[in-house]
View (tube, rainbow over the protein chains, first blue to last red):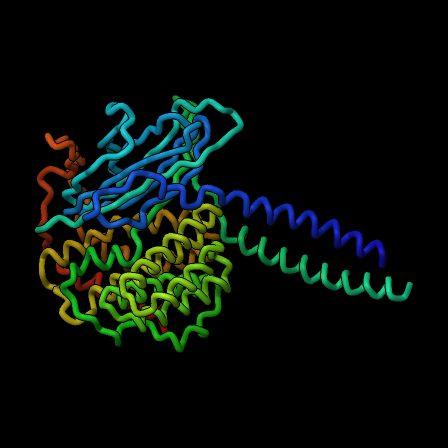
Length: 149
Length: 296
């Protein structure tokens, strides 16, 4: 009886540790809200995401941008990450780089006018973050505005 | 001594139940969680983590119909039948379907109907353990602002974002794929079948056709994140809709970007043909067929 009881206590501790780890891994949720907002006439998009960045890790978010719309894209990250590198890439055969903020002094927001609906990749990374073990929160915030026909 | 042994027995039973609960929670979390796709870029030795973000049902609906359709409640999923969806796949797909219905009702200022869908979504989400703790406060806020339509729209947005970001943070991309599939099909179904739908007009058809990009991404998500049995099932369900969408020529010219003086970057495909030769009859038929299969 006592042995069974001890086994259950140990099992509880092990499972509890897993459950706690699971809940701690959610710490970046909502981080994208810290990124710059678009002008008021824009609507917030469900495409925004919070991500975890590490050294030598690129995050690629596959998305669809609808045509005849303006999209305001802003990126941000924890201070320790340094500047956030952001590229917008067309998901076509050529994987054309449509925008690279490295050529724009790592500007954290950009307004795009999308003429035709297209599949795009939003790529973000922290090229100046050199901590081998650490990771920090970052976010991509997306707004849109329907253009008049 | 007898009391001590009794206490141990009670504790023992409690621990057994608690452990069973922990095992069930952890199992459902891990069974539907697949890590995002990672690839190593050999040149830079950089790890690439790739995942998907699909527009929410209200964004798809709004894009297709542009406020040109009339509210048609007879099309909406019957909430009285919610207990008939029993498998995990069915319940996730219906979660997406109900989200699309809530967005549809909210977009036509139908507060009470939107609220009915919210209640079922909330109940389903809790039962499937897909909510973060913030949902508690959301329900309270909804009850306090029940007559304010802007609040209902706002709460819909929050509900969707919290659900999706929670699934994303916990690597539950398979569940995200199924919810998205339900919301996607229901949004197109409502846009195509509502009264006043301009289904024969070129611009409307073009916007329906544009959903092919999302369909392609959904197919990729099924392939990457679903377990083999669920993947086989849903891939079969989508075969005919994929064929219908493949009737249209897809390849535009490569995209180009150009910076304007005011700083905006204009992106498009040169010479993109905005006319389509095929009507969308087959897409319409296949969307209705799949929806009929999913929604009783």
